[in-house]
Amino acid sequence: MRHSKKYAWSREASKKEWNPNPNTPFGGKRFAYKEVHATVRWRTLRDRFIKLNPLCQSCLSKGITKAAQCVDHIKAIQDGGKAWDETNLQSLCNRCHSKKTSKEINERRRSKGGYRNPET
Image (cartoon, rainbow, N blue to C red; front, side):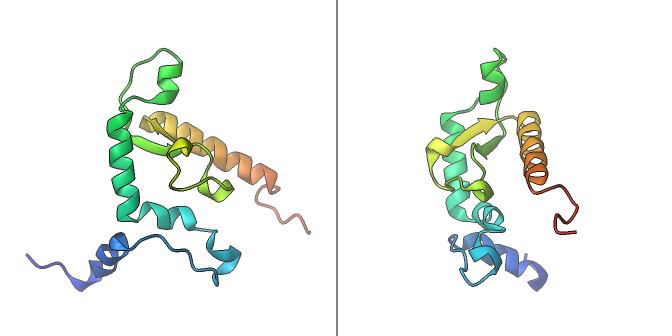
């Protein structure tokens, strides 16, 4: 079965290696985390990491044994974390990953003054 051309971009994008364009706003760093997760290199690293660390690290620290579904960057890429450094990765269940991500987003918003423009 042949796929429509509409989805051709996604197949090609998933095959490319991550290489941020320094000419984009913020030196190619603004959406770098999205580019990282679209690569074959990330999927390979994620699959290998989750096989080596199959349990949620957050739940495990609370004495709960729960399977991990996500590989998370301990220090987010947009906060300066290294994308490919395995010491910056942890396996989490969906619930713990959602909690952690939500907390990071709220902290980022708070540190930037929320939604309002601080210049006004």
